[in-house]
Length: 531
Ligand code: SIN
Image (tube, rainbow, N blue to C red):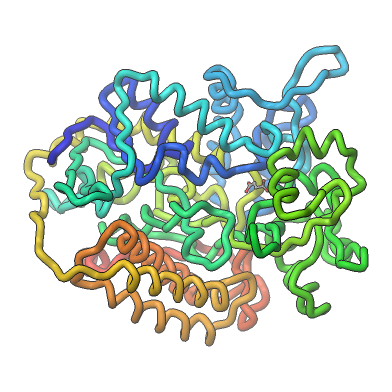
């Protein structure tokens, strides 16, 4: 089956939905999502959206905090766009009906209640208790469902982008997709395609991400010939629940913003040893401190103590966490919460410009899948929903303006026909992915070494080879994507001969001197074409 649309969006999180609502004012939009629309990474974001909304705050301060967290690798122009356009994107959400927490100002007015998270020098986190992502997602989905120009096709997974070289220009003209049941594949052709597929948590054994986060966008862009950057910068969230029944459930940083303290089982608070901002130091520092304390004490978790925070505040601001912990027998008003770090966010991704454009004409990427340069070597807390909306909108505006250019190639596209291949059994694909998850946890985690990563890359590449030339079901496609992304993380990490931000290696424990640079991986056929 073939579907023609003006704008194709792959993924239904905040970046994809923001793009869809903007582009829909100018043409038809088709959103493809591999599960239900709200099954997106965005829905799981707890903390909030960082934005300069308070009278004591300035764009310069938000910029400065973002740059400090990014450890010298942020792109100044991209950060400037992020913080400058961010507040208006938050106001757009409010106009669409999002309910954020408010408080009474000194003048008796209801104003946004602004929270604090690690690395922020001001209170600037706009939030809805501890389910901000879900509130934003549902608000945007409601608007999308009411828009006549937008069609959401759910439970369709994209197998690959459709790209070809037309008059020397690599161009994307849509994507091939399949339903989960037996049936005809679907090809969607579009004048512009947005990758908004989120992150890659399922590359690791323990992650705060949902099951859909299998790195599809990065893997598909890589196969299509797009350069990928900074994949070594995988953010580990310092505080995820350590419990057999709820492994890696996120305990938002906002709880530390409210006064939560990291302690050992005997009550010793240890962050004073590591950073002047103590429990609110940047995430990479807190995560490494926890790993180091766990090694020193030979224990398998530390504790986040919120017992001194008022019961009302805990119930009001952290209902999701209170409930999740209660389900496993932890009363957060009385018991310190056992926590460990777990994979949380991919700071690198598909290389994009200031309008979320990739190096493939007609292809855009926004949100976690993209490397816009705003996060550098470490993302500042709560900058991710902001980035998704700012760059999702910019992508749409650019695609609308340049749609005609991208349309030129459409009629000359050859869509690859169906080729019979031996089927890879799902069990084999899933076992390969699980093996890679364990390898990545051991070798590409918070503390790394060259020899470990080299051995890991060797094993992961061998597992990826097992997918070549075989027909793949949906879960096998996801496994192949996750394993592809694992190779990119390892290759990027091996190329960086220093420790910076989220990449810490025992072989190069210091930051290198001089101007730092991004790690850019270029797919082979493109490299050859450029020679
Ligand atoms: C959190 O709530 O701690 C996560 C927020 C984020 O990842 O920015």
